[in-house]
Amino acid sequence: MAGLGRTIPALPVRSASEAVTFYRDRLGFEVLHHDGGFAVIRRDDAVLHLWEAGDEGWRARGTLERPVRSGAESFIAGTASCRIEVERVDDLFEEMRGAGVLHPVSREGVSDTDFGSREFATLDGDGNLLTFFRWVEYAEPAEIMRRYLDAMRRGDWDAGTAFFADDIVIRIPGRSEFAGEHRGRQAAVDYIAAAVARARGHEVEVELVDMLVSGDRVALVVRERFGREGGTLEISRVNLYRVRGDRIAEIAIFEGDQYEMDELMAGGAEPG
Picture 1: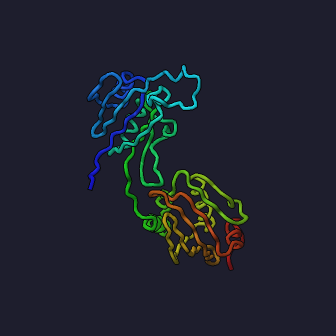
Picture 2: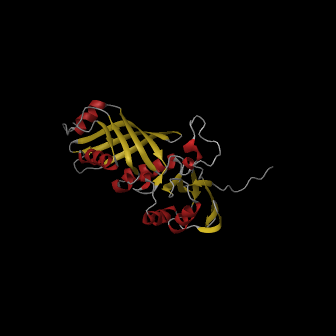
Picture 3: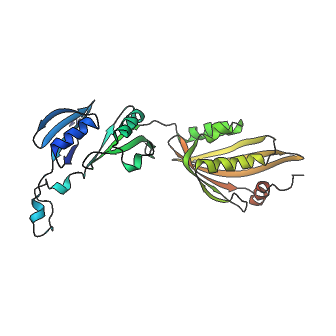
């Protein structure tokens, strides 16, 4: 067994001296070693090597058919990237935002990825990409959906819709004013509020008939009963969800009786 250990990224920079200053003053690293065009820096347990890509000889060549020859051409500086695991990624984000080093994709905040990390990206003075992340352990999609359904069944709409991702996409079938694709958490909340409003103050019961799970997708077979004056309207449907982390990222609705649902959403006649 080879017993591989820690890796140390080596990032190409135009000037090692300027890069050392940037990493020290803007990114909070301490300098362990600096000798000419090479430096070793550290912050906590993260160690980086900086090496100077300062060969300008390529500019005088008659051809760029084979641009990389020495391996230290100046155009290589700023072309590398690395990922650094961090315990308190949100705290570090605030620090890096104050330092003005965030990559444009991260200026709105820390992101949750589909592969289980919470992260943000920064750029050093040469353009090298440093992504800071932490692994996040989420509950299984089926468990997320059980928690969501429990909230909806007890009528706690705020708790239920809190499971919606900010960029959720909800696809609503039929011919009502709500039909089509709607993007964003508020659009999904508005749809649910409109459906509940059709009950006109009466209870809405949600019965789970079955749950089918495949990877990050969960299908709920449900019966929803809308209490109305003069009777109860029962709707059968299949809702297909895609779960991302601990949030619902997509919802596609398939009605058992689309005409009946269209009538409900249009505020149609009371059931007899």
